[in-house]
Image 1 (spheres, rainbow, N blue to C red):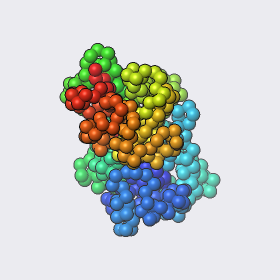
Image 2 (tube, rainbow, N blue to C red; image 1 turned 45 degrees about the vertical axis):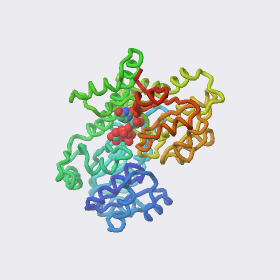
Image 3 (cartoon, rainbow, N blue to C red; image 1 turned 30 degrees about the vertical axis):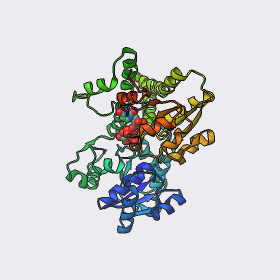
Image 4 (tube, rainbow, N blue to C red; image 1 turned 90 degrees about the vertical axis):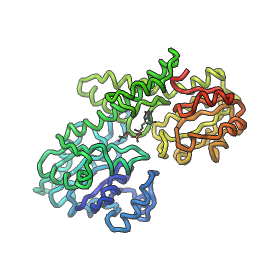
Length: 438
Ligand code: UDX
């Protein structure tokens, strides 16, 4: 079976590579020649654990190909996936110009029946726009070809994308014909055989599923952040509350960890887009508006604690930051709470020394030379007044706190992810601040 994937960003590249891994012949297309040249030589444009060896292996086996030409790679493909970017416009809605440009190109060059699948996260109703764009190009050239559109949202988590793709909780596919359904079933057969459920539905429902899933997860996080803030006021411990409620299987233990707010390329964008879609259609998403509001506020919680401890004027002080990416195991800095935290510290007159295991280069694009980049986590502590743990990378989990205490000017830790043992640190003479812990 042969498929073509347009867009070698995060979604496209992981999707294409994983399909080739299960034996499908995949061609990944991108207009960025440098990126494609790099990929042909096994050079990854993104950091994702396990991706590089998988790309190399499938390149070698001849199942994975990279090209800049969509035109030359539509023939024989049974499905073409659109996995290009949908950056948020100024008003928060997803910008579809890249998606629709690809749709038009497909219409200009297809020569046989195809399923045109949207894989990028696109608002409800986009498949219809894709259909119209393909059809109008077919009409222009007087081609009497049939095709179907389908929606196949991705649920990949950065840092665990390969695993998420190969062992999904579920696969959601929206189709509009039996013919398209058969092709999508064939494509996902290796996963179906392994017992991963594939849920077929109509196209708008599949499009909505993606937004509803991410919005629900964002809601869980904001809800817990709100509870955590109240726990602090009431003298409760959110860690205990989290365990207490998570053991109810209707609530579940996942995605109820309070912290410094959610970031990344999906949650902030999708929550905004769903609010916008609803608004455009005359509906007010009250819960999601609050989810956004709580999240914005949560990014300031750690610096509020710093100011409460050291005073509002932080001039002359230096703070060590551990972790810059929006979450561990990725170099992604999009909407990272670290950016807000660092800017607030700088605005209050402080200096910042930061370390991240992989996101330092990415961080330099956002933060430039406003901060000092340390060579490792301990190096951030030299002459620093306190430590702020922002991203819970595994390597930050069990530091040598005797060494930390000797390097820091003051034994003060602001733990933005509640990963340290408060009692242990307090016994060692530290002042410890967590989230939702008194
Ligand atoms: C998310 C979805 O999980 C995935 O299904 C979708 O396809 C894309 O968006 P991702 O953005 O990679 O994936 O990250 P995820 O692991 O979901 O974390 C998102 C954010 O929530 C991070 O900033 C993380 O720190 C935060 N988070 C997560 C919490 O603050 N608390 C939690 O309990 C869980």
